[in-house]
Image (cartoon, rainbow, N blue to C red; front, side):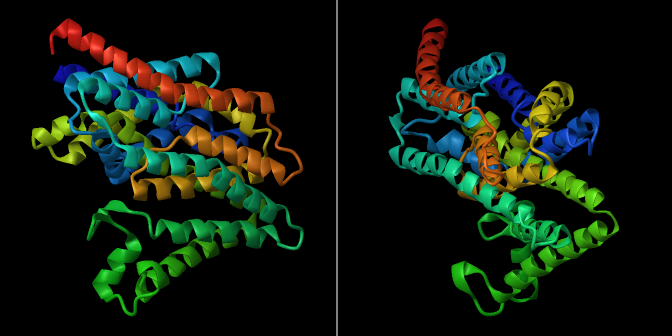
Length: 392
């Protein structure tokens, strides 16, 4: 059963790499800024790096915080992962993408309850609040970004680099495994602050040095892109689109890998196995899934993004990066489908129309709810059946 659970985890990671990690580079493909196969290569590399560097918090939430009173067994992990993978496959088949975060969360909760655990209501409240807020926050950020890019009184040589500078300042405060911190993973700004002396503390726990590092990092990114755009506006915008796709793919790997590794994390903890090895397993699965399975989906998604244009694509991706990093910091599994669809709608409203079928949006929302509840029911029943057959 341990082998089956590990194999199911690896298969889930492969599926995530082939599907959930594709949207970040779809705009670049749709804008002909990057060939499909090269985009698939980059998806695998950046998502795998994000999985190892940032996946720990999501993995812990999925593996340990969704059920109280019991530890997820290999049999329960296998039942949950098989259930989630089945729901994702149905979504791909029907054309209504099933959020992996919803399906996996429901399946783990269902299998855990069937195992004899108790509901973790505090965790559910935290997840539900975040998930409900995501569409509104994502659409608002995308709307504001698209509005900024459409303003005639703000030259593109200033507006686009300003957005890039904001992304750079946020990157300086992204938690990464390479920077040790008081709570495990640290940030570049925090690392520099501890090395040179923090100085007076400001609002939110930030000190003067960390703020200065963030501003300097953002300014460097701003100036680099501005110089490139002064030489060629189109080349600069496309370069930013590719770079933005890279950081979003990195973030998606960090947020998605825990959906595959979380259910078997209690098993690895009991064996004393370092967490980085578990995340490495998920990273390899995501890498192979992206290289082998993402090109077809990437082309399909890119066709929809090609109707948005480069600027609306930028507006759709920026919320994905920001919300994913907030979710990783809080240890909350999220759905990139949820973020991207909301962002596309928000950026479309800035142009006067969402450009999206309201009927399909309605069906998609229903599919999300069905996946969450349905995966819980199926996970509960599948574990009960497997336990009955195996005598566990």
